[in-house]
Amino acid sequence: MFVDYYELLEISPKANSETIDRIFRYFAMRYHPDNRDTGDEARFSEIVDAHNTLKDPVTRAHYDIQYRDYLSYRRELAEAASDPRTIERDSVIQAKVLSLLCARRRQDVHNPGIGDEELERLSGCSTEHLDFHLWYLKAKGWIARIENGMFAITVEGIDRANSVFGRAAPVATRLLEDAHAR
Image (cartoon, rainbow, N blue to C red):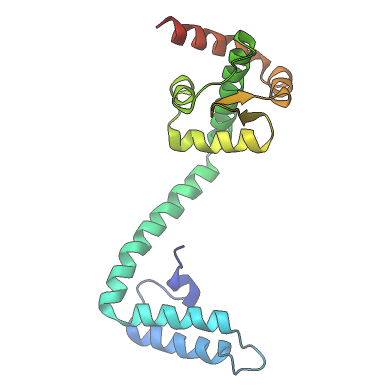
């Protein structure tokens, strides 16, 4: 897990070596385990790691490459979290998966499963993105893996599909029929 040493030391990524040393000395005295009032061994260790990484120009250059990737990741995460359409898209995908599995169960109650790749294809969702939705639907108890490793809707999932997503079922049925006709 990436640790933001600039945040930890409360300095700018543009801080010079003198600033890094000065701030390190301040925090080192504050969090040193021998300090009875504010000593914190774990925090002190993090401060030492941050200082050792940022004081050496070569190590810092390598760290800064990771830091830029980290900032990019945080920016993408913040954008996704602030986009109101994200939750709406997630609900649509979850409804589609439940609807597909419900339609499949209706078609053949004794062979109700749909495999990962087929779910990916029918939902139009990449594996990486679909994993989140499958995790969520499994955690809610609305879908489960059956003996053959495929996903199938549970009784709770059918209740959920009927109560909330009932309008999506005809779309899923057409998708399954189109897929089996090929």
